[in-house]
Length: 273
Image 1 (cartoon, rainbow, N blue to C red):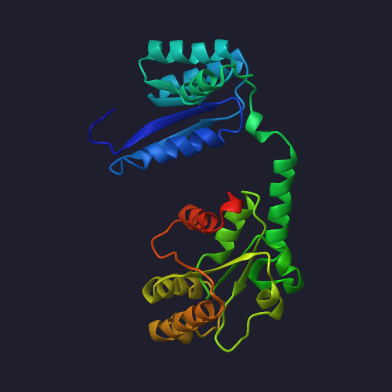
Image 2 (image 1 turned 180 degrees about the horizontal axis):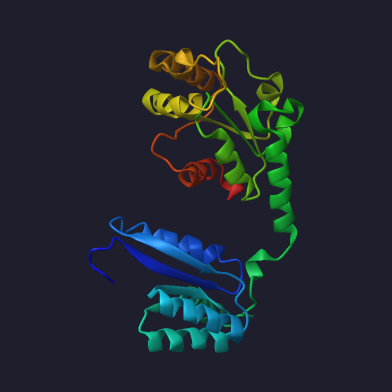
């Protein structure tokens, strides 16, 4: 690769959706911030003809090759062809499967896409996602006690994206905005089942995000109070007082990704793991 270029090709070959590979590849690439990975994703590769077409694409743009292919013949073909071309390749799941086999004393079934089977967990995730979308932004308050988690917070504290991420893990999540002078729904205060968590951020961060939001508002919208740091500080003070009064935990999302925020929420209630 030309040393003057700050990018590299990352080829991800999967016999399933490729989600595992994408996550692994991005996690590794994130450790090398001086370089940008140009991703080439090849999902549902399950026969020799498909694979040879992928190999041709790799030959045209050499780079790192990661693959998850359970068919041993096809997996060996990837390794052989990458060696021929002169590019590095790794079967991402093989070391993990080998470890499992060694510990459990049995061979794996080697089924493509086994993690995506439509079992009870799959339908639980779909149910959680439907529930979460129906209960976004304080909707359907009568059902709050059916939630696993209720996220509260002032505007622009990532309540909705965090809710959706949790739902994709099968966690039924509702979210409610905190607005000074507007009481929270009585059904939330009466709820005994859900974990209620308040999301906050610094006034500077919220103001910055809100300013971007204001840029997309319709003509005639006045956002001075909405983006004013002093006003935001008062909103945060009010949110903190609500949490202190009800003994609700607070998570500062200023420097957290959605994934990190979700992990912190799950850690607050082990039964959500």
